[in-house]
Length: 155
Image 1 (tube, rainbow, N blue to C red):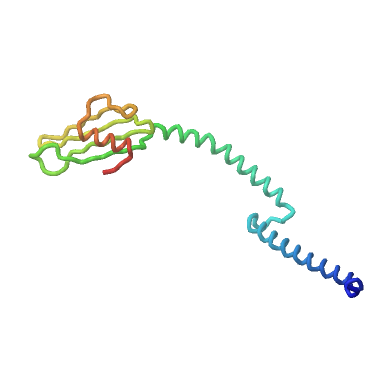
Image 2: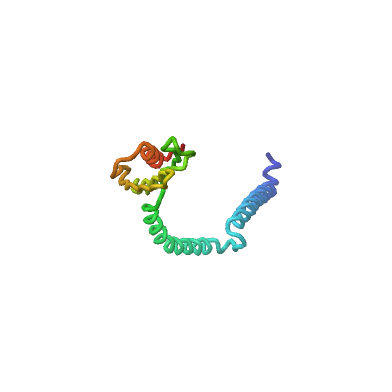
């Protein structure tokens, strides 16, 4: 015990030096992390740099928000759901040259287009779809393609 009381200043000095060394190591690690995040910014200017970046992001957000709203509005009425099927409606013609195509928007509004290939020519039919329901009667092929488009299932 006598040794501790005689050398208490050395012990206290050693503990202080050790504490300062550990603190210095933590500061070194912290400075390295800050420079990874902010680049070559002087650590004293970190708060200023953060505020500048926040202002820049706010300005970009103000510019982008109206554009995003216009894009979202346009996307509601754009074609988002598609169904397609090729088939052979007649036994006397070769190949699946006829087709049915469904084009729907986000709210299942759109059109079903059918093309029937025959030896004498090709006929096209278009039928309006509102809310997923046809306005005219649909053939089996048209119903199948409409269901595919609404449910998002491919054949």
